[in-house]
Each structure stands twice: as C-alpha cells, then as structure tokens.
Length: 547
Figure (tube, rainbow, N blue to C red):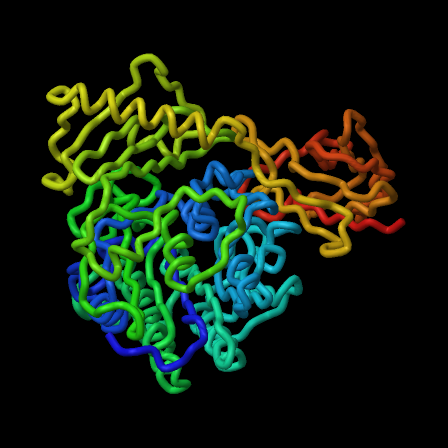
C-alpha cells in the first residue's frame, strides 16, 4: 500500500459486467480464458470471496446504486413493468455529486428508460447508455453490439465501434476531462450477455482451443472487457491517478446455462450459488493492501455504504440503507465481524411473492425456498408448508447435501428471519412511476414489453403520472398492421377513441392530470383489439404534450 499523493478524495471507478458470473474469470479457474487485468485487480486489491448479487440484472443494479434491497426501490425483475426503479430513490451518483464529485455512466442502466428514472435524472451529469435490458432489445430494435444505437444524455445517436470499447472510450475521456476533480465513474457493460456478438479476432483463439462456438464467443467478449480494464488502468497511471483511484469490479449475477461456473450449482435466474455468487475485486493502491482475501459474506447492498466510508462522503441524514460498511474488513480481513444474514429473492410476476425463489444466507448456512422457480410467472406457493432446503454452505459450496431434515431448528430460525425481512421490504411494494408531460422528457416514448405492467403474461398499461393536464398527441407503432380502425386511450376511468384511416397511427386526446394506469391500444376493423406481449417494438407509444 502506497501513501496517497493528493489531498482530494479518492476517485471511484465501478465496473459491473452482465452475465459473467463467478467462474468466468482467470483467477477462478475458467479453462483457457485469459483475463490478466481482472486477475490483476484481484491480486493487487482486495477480493471478497463470497460476494452475492441477485440472480437477474435490474435487481442487482438497483441494490448496487442504492445500498438497499431491490423490493424497496420498486424493482422486481427485468422487464414487463419489473425494472422501473422509483425516481425518489437516492442513488450513489446523487450522493457522490452532492459531495463534489463529477459523475458519469457509460453502459447499461436497466433501471428505467423514462423520466424521472433515467441515469441523467438519478445523479449522473454525463451518461452514454442504452435503453432496455440490452442492445438490440426493445425499445431499440433492431440493434447490434457493433455500431449500436446509444443515448447521450436524453438524445439518441448512432455510435460507431464495438459497444464495450465505446463505453470505455467514453469513460476514459470523462476521466481525463475531470482529472483535477474527484470523479465517480460507473461502467456497466452489457457484455457478455446474449446476443454473443464479438469479432472473430477475439473468438477464434478459443475456437482453435477446442471450445464450442458459444463458449468461444463468451470468452472473447470477456477478454475484450479485460483488455478495456487494462486500458483503464494504464490511463489512470498515465494521468497520475492510479494511486488515488478505487477500482471495483464485479458481475451482476451468474452466467447463462452452459457456461463454466467453478463447480457452483445452477446458473442465472436461480438462487443456488451458481445464480448469485459473483466475483468482487476492489483495488486502491493508496488505501488498500494488495492481495487480501475476505471470507465473510457480502453483497451488492454493501457497496454504497463501503464507498461512503472510504471516500468520506456526507450521507443524507434520513437515508436508510440495508448494506454494511465493509471497509474494516477491506483494511484488515481478520477484523472481528458479527455474523449476519443476507436475503436474496428475484422472480417473474407482477408483485413480490412470499417464498418464491428466495434464499437467506448466513456465514455457515444457506436456507432456500422453491429454488429453480424464478422464471415462473404463475406459481402456487404453499404458505403454510413451503418447499425448503438447507445447506452448510461453508462445507458444501456445490449445495449437494440438503440438511433441512437434520436441522429443523436452523430451518425454522432462518425461515422466521426471511419472513420478517419480506414483511419489511415487500409490504408496500410498487413499481416506479413514469411521469408524462414534464419538460424534462417531452415527447416521451413508452415501451410496451419493457415497461407496461403485465397480467397473465399480457400487457395492460403503464404506471404513470400525468403532470400536466392538456392536449396530447398519441402515436402508436403499428408496423405492418395497416388498415382502417381506431386508437384508444384508457385513463382515469375513461376510454377515449379516435378513428384511424389507412396509414394513420396517431390521434389527439385531452387528458387530465393524475396518477394511475394508462393503456393505449389500436383496433382494426377487420380484427378488433390487438395486444402484443413479445420483445418487439410493435405497440410502443409516443406521447407529446402540445397544449
């Protein structure tokens, strides 16, 4: 550990990858994979060996940004109304900005595409990002990892290059422009998430090593991320900022099926270890001793309170966090540390559901209810006698020996702890609210698949607040479904309609101010009402307050 060379607060670069998981990094034994720069972060920094995220993207990102369990923030899962973080949440970016930091995000946000949930509404003064859950998904279909459509602030543009390279290029430019001030830079890559788009330059060496094409592409994407991490570290060193910059690296959750995962059970979407254990490395040459390993359990909710201490941030007095400050362990892993219990739950559906794909984790034991059911939308839970499992996770990392029958007292205690947690975090759950008519985003685009609330796997409207009563132009994406029909808007207990001729897709409506569920649809004379639930842009809506 070196002495700090400046008096300003340490800079922070926070990197989170998508779908990488615990095993897909060289220091964790991934065969053939080359990640010298990720390995360097582990070897020159502090590694949390038992670090957890949620099993899906948005819930982990919400907890990372707020230090709070995802249910508190309005996040439930990743689409169909489940990935809208409340604009009232206080984010790490807002806290850093209030403490004099310059703040920038470059990559995947996935916590809301509309005001007041966009990164530029949530504390990031600069943001180059993509909407939805991934490049090429709604609302920006079609799309590619090469020359992707991105957003600079609130304006879309056609970028040139490979997505991960672009995000790091933008981050490095931001760092250089703000090198004289403390900065908080968030780089959430969408790689190595599907689709597995990467140049043959990166994938071919792994194909030649005998790996199948899918794994070769994953490894190529990860190696590309690693090269960019190397560029980042070299840039910090060139600017004289290396000693004064905390670089944190982690993944959001486990990998998709079929990828190496270091012997952990299951994968993305599940609460077995393979779905939630992720790499976590923190490197700060001026403040943390290199090569230390922390064996205490830790999670996404701990990052913000830890950074608040390491950076000496003034925190809002009324802000309630769920995470723990890990800085004592980072400075001395053998420090006395009280046992704690972490709670993780993520599943499909329209509201939190007790016992559905959940886990409680202590230092020794791991209790689970209905693991493997996270992708199920309609699910019958036995509230009186739920299906439960128990593992001694210190001795049985692979979760092979269910001890629930042998230790009923442990099962009972951890279930009671989970019940208390669920009552606390999920009792008043509601998704974030899109605000319409605000000058910050007018016109506003509403993505049906990503943001509409779903019931029985079909959309039935957006949770919105119309801030200004008045006249709105409403346009719906009909794509190839042309022909005479009508456009309908249901709002505040009333349904308004406008006829549509061939080639028309918009109408003008008088809408009252208020909060509630807004539904917009069109009907063809020959078919009737049309409802779309797929990850496509048909049925998406644009609204503009005009008077």
